[in-house]
Image 1 (cartoon, rainbow, N blue to C red):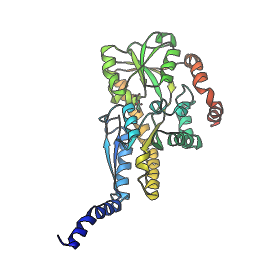
Image 2: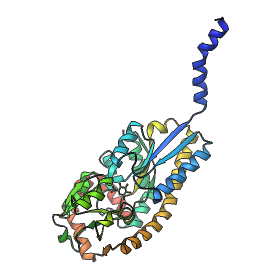
Image 3: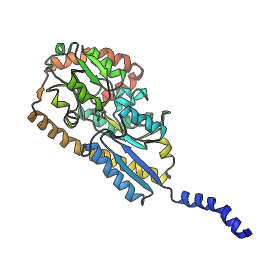
Image 4: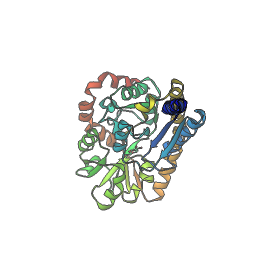
Length: 327
Ligand code: BDP
């Protein structure tokens, strides 16, 4: 082999590396526990389309909806290892990993849904996203999806707090929620979203708690016909990217991802309101009884959970005052 040819062969791997770097191509697998057509899934898919277009194809995006990449807990682990690059996850699931976010997971921390929205749109919302980003868990938190208001759904009616006594109620895997249900007199049992349907069907649990779209779309209403409007949790849901992926992006690409995530936040909110109203109507048509509580009856749930707010809220007393001060 002549010298020139040898030189060419030696230089090949280097040339390959250079051309690879120039293609800066980042592939995003986005994990969703919700099915296609669900409000955040729609907004996230639109975000992905815009991301592909506006990055001129340097960033590719693929949605994995319906929990195919695992439960939310498993997905959070995969984001930490970098196997999944983006997800939307309930804040309830982030709490055990980044305890500072548990302020938003406290029962009755927000006065109502509108109060929660004001908070996540403002500086406190950004502070909580930053807590996630600044933790050591390989996540950059970009925006908030709306997860509505959570109420109890049960096989036997809960018309008053006393009716909940001893009922096994599924909660997300966060000790704070087990304590919350226990404080209300029930028996909190943690399990993944995908296990609820059969647990209700087989009687492993007597009920669960969630918003109307989840109760409908995950078919829980088929085996739990009573929906008690406790409004005990209003959990927003961060959209996160693996920090290892984020760091591969140029500053321009990072700004684009952030901008499009914030656009998705606004888009999802409109879809959410429509979906919630539709879901309520469909649940009622499907035989679910909506049980309204009087102010006194609701106060009984609030009072019963005071020890939970005291236990988990103690380190965040100032932040809680700031949340309460937002009108
Ligand atoms: C829904 C959330 C989803 C949660 C699910 C649950 O959108 O992220 O995983 O509740 O409770 O409201 O498992």
